[in-house]
Image (cartoon, rainbow, N blue to C red):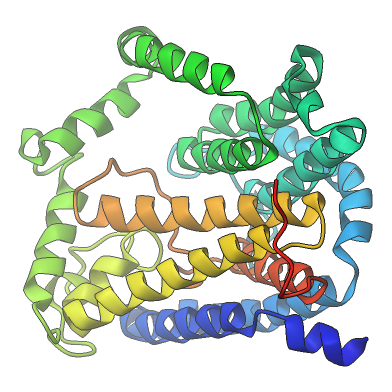
Amino acid sequence: MGRQRLKNTEWAILICAVALTIIGMIALYTVSYNTEFSELKKQAIWLGISVVAMLIVGIIDYEVIAKVSPIWYVFFCALLVGVLFTTPVNGARSWFDLGSFTFQPAEFTKIFLILVLSFTISKIQERGISRINKFGWLLLILLIAGIPIGLVVKEPDNGTAMAYIIALLCILFTAGIDKKYIITVAVLVAVAVPLIYNFVLPDYAKNRINVYLNPELDPRGAGYNIIQSKLAVGAGELLGMGLLQGNQTQLGYLHPKTTDFIFAAIGEELGFIMAALIVILYVFLITKAIYVAKTAHDNLGSYIAIGIAGIFFFHMAENIGMTIGLLPITGIPLLFISYGGSSLITSFVCIGLLLNISSKRQRTIFINK
């Protein structure tokens, strides 16, 4: 049984995660050179913790983890409430300052939101797949997702809130939600977007959107970061300017270069080939996560895997997109690569869950939803 599980495990997922992490450590080496590699040293510690967390999650049956997830969901929602009473950092109340390091509960909430949504939906569907389309059950699912989404928006951290929403939509779509709900939501979004922009969004959010559409509106203010990021990516050309040689990266024009704009630093110093390799690794990782969802042993595993795939896709698309000027800046990290303990631990826990789910499948069986 043990050998069969090892054989079934989708090890390519782990290989992709390790490759991205190695690239991230190289990038952190060069961007933290002027700070005596402080971020690199801390990230190495977080990496060790992340690997341990991944192993623990990979060993414990994911069904057991899902069963206890509602307790952790409540706990982290409580932390999301508590973080609102902390001192703002860069205008957002997203971190608990624990002295030598900070803790971002919204990152860990991603995992338990996916788990509790998957567990709830799989329980609802035990008496019929179509029960998910009953309004009462659907309302319960939206309430479960809406609580942490609302709290994260309050911080404000709109990028992470969008990651939650993407995971929710992926899970609901895989669970077989009726097309009428999809069409209704699409129409509501089309109507709501201009109303939200004009009457709901705060000025800073409107400014980000306006500057995204035209960075030259405020080249020394809100448009500064995206202009410098695009300059950095363009300057790298095919092979890059070399480690520690990037003008925007090393002279302080790119900020924050260890988190939001680390892809721009990679593009400048390591070039288009390395930047393209990152995209290829992410696409392969996401494709494998979707494959795990398709071949999962049960609906629970399928929903967890597809929710994780949605998280990975959103972080890749948003971070790289905002770096090259295709999407608005939201402060979303590039998973496995950007500096940040909470993000790194969360990412490797997701890898552990994917390995766990894939180990229980039978390669010759494809679940037909």
